[in-house]
Image 1 (cartoon, rainbow, N blue to C red):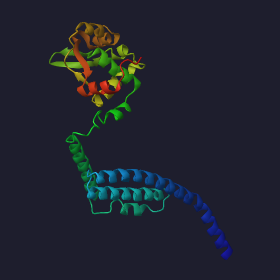
Image 2 (tube, rainbow, N blue to C red):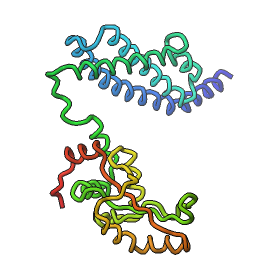
Image 3 (spheres, helix red, strand yellow):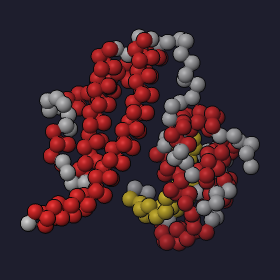
Image 4 (cartoon, rainbow, N blue to C red):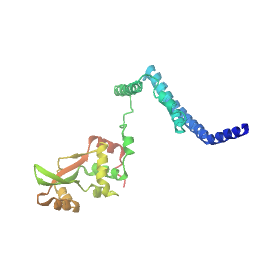
Length: 264
């Protein structure tokens, strides 16, 4: 019986070895990653505290938050192996209910205070570009850069809605027909509606109800096959309503700062 028990125990140990190895490897990688990240953040915090830009209490709160995040990360590794799921619930926060939300609110308030402090600092020269520009560049397709360049070079672009019915009770048949894809040289002109929606989402363009001054440009748009097809679909009461699409002030500044207009 003793030999059989030893064999069963050894078999169980061998079966557990792959799981233990995964836990060890994951723990080591997460520890190394957390150490590097925390060292960089701690150096920046100590520098801000030495310069008087961050209070000691804020430094303590951020450090405690890092430790809690590390503990949760380590416990999540064990959870994935099915070992200690209940313990992670205990360390969701180290204070009473609502402490995590209070820490977040305090951190956001500290960031707001820092922005106001920098706005009053005449020697602060870090505001040459808007902090959102780098993020926006990562959310643009190449065709969207071409569209922005078209707006910068040619100005507002004409667009037409096709509507049918009486003036006070009309129905939209085809919205926002334009020639932006062709004029900008887009590689995927069928994606222009999605491109324009994304540029509007980013605050770079807006859709105006006002027409542009050059009314002759609308005649070219209204002669396009998709506009003519929409007019036929709308029937006898179909008509075009002239609109325009243009850069916002934020979009102008973005293009001035990051888009080379002389690129082919």
